[in-house]
Image (tube, rainbow, N blue to C red; front, side, top):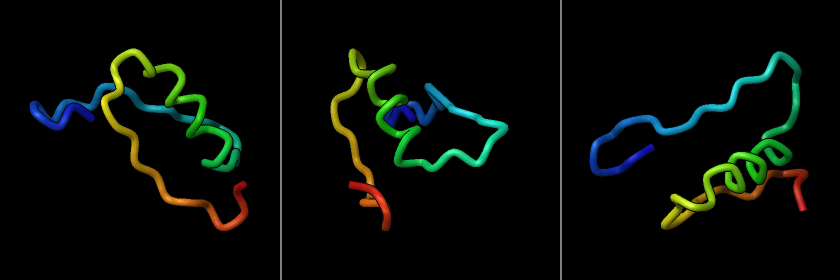
Length: 47
């Protein structure tokens, strides 16, 4: 989400029950050129 305009800049949707710990890094890499900061919590079963 762009914090200045509040526009959603990316969304990831899946039809399977894939854990966010696997999807998060994929979304971050996809937007790495535009990222200024990244905040996330530590998943209870993520490394």
